[in-house]
Amino acid sequence: MTNLHKIKQEICDIGDRIYKKGFAAGNDGNISYRVSEKEVVCTPTLISKGFMKPEDLCVVDMDGNQLSGRRKRTSEILLHLAIMKDRPEVKSVVHCHPPHATAFGIAREPIPQCILPEVEVFLGEVPIARYDTPSSQNFADTILPFVQKANVVVLANHGTVSWGDTVERAYWWTEVLDAYCHMLLLARGLGRVNYLTEPETRELLEMKKQWGMKDPRHEMRNCDICANDVFRDSWKSCGVEQQAFTPPHYTGATVGSGPSPAAPSSNGHATTAEQEALIQAITDRVMKEVLKQK
Image 1: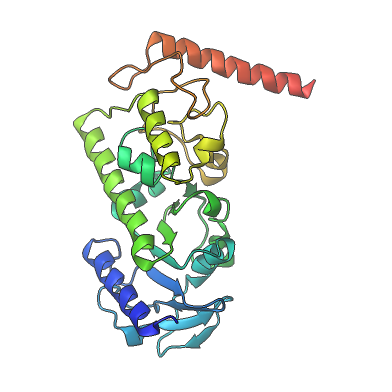
Image 2 (image 1 turned 45 degrees about the vertical axis):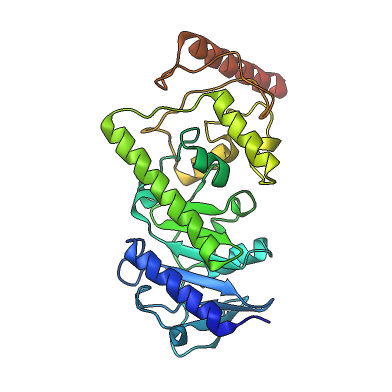
């Protein structure tokens, strides 16, 4: 049986961590936990997440109707419920505004891969959802294309949302993501971002597979594993464009099938062989589309 008071205390504890990390200024952010098939505990609106008490929290149904609580429920509960409906195993959702990850959402710059082992294993590719007015159902629906393939999403010009089987785990994805984005910005400020080689990245993905951790890149053929291929189709609708971080392009192999013929240079810039391979890959794709239309 779920201990409601314990869950509320855990939400307050995570709210305190979010506030102290600078992820939720003022009244920003919201947290929820599904306590039954039809009931969800959530944070109220207009309260600092660093100063909540268990008695401040609300209970809503799966349509967002408030069932109990002396304060009004968060206006963004529909975002949380959309995730829980799409992923029934998800228990908790955390939405906040971590500054470094949110910066990528404001710039609409895809978060690069093939740089940090922990990110490859634990986060994988992180999508950016299109912008919509917060608190609406349309806003909640912006994350639906990504819920099945990710545990954290950057919301364009807004913040992040992450989810998991506990409040701690739901928050954890956000903390890992923001730390990574901070490192990327620091490294770029120093003047250079070095990428892992394709064999090194594939080894990490194979390790992830052996540990029973799913990654959409395992199911993709001819996947350029460092080019955000999993969510590339969503870029246009989200206004995402690769500008500040341009990864090396690897060609040809299915994830887990070994190194490609064109190895990247050590400083992350394309070699002549890579450039030729990329040109050939683009030519092949164009010709494939032309033949489809005939």
